[in-house]
Image (cartoon, rainbow, N blue to C red; front, side, top):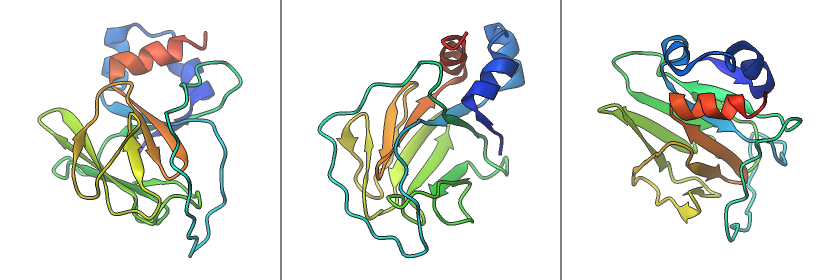
Length: 166
């Protein structure tokens, strides 16, 4: 799976026009937003308070984020996982993230997300995710897993985000 520091991604892709960007990077993106980090351990169990509302997206130079291409390893397997376990497709070593925290599924060109029954929960656009109940991801949606913030982008909106750093 491809991942980029957002600052490096800007340098290599922000100059592209939309068609060229879609050709180079046809998939959707999950951006791990800059924010506090809690080191994870093999048996980290942390209860966290739920935020009352999502925080605004950081779209300013100097705030580093990490962008993950949502491209399943196997073209026939339209699922990706996020968690602290090394077997997950996206590994986030933060103590508020469960070993398997989120499951992303692509069907008919659209992505859904579901909480896998994580200890610290997840929310989509400020609304808690019920474990095992998939919810559709819309471009520029804000997703939290434990205390870690993510943003979901379709290619057009990811290019827009990159151009904000010019």
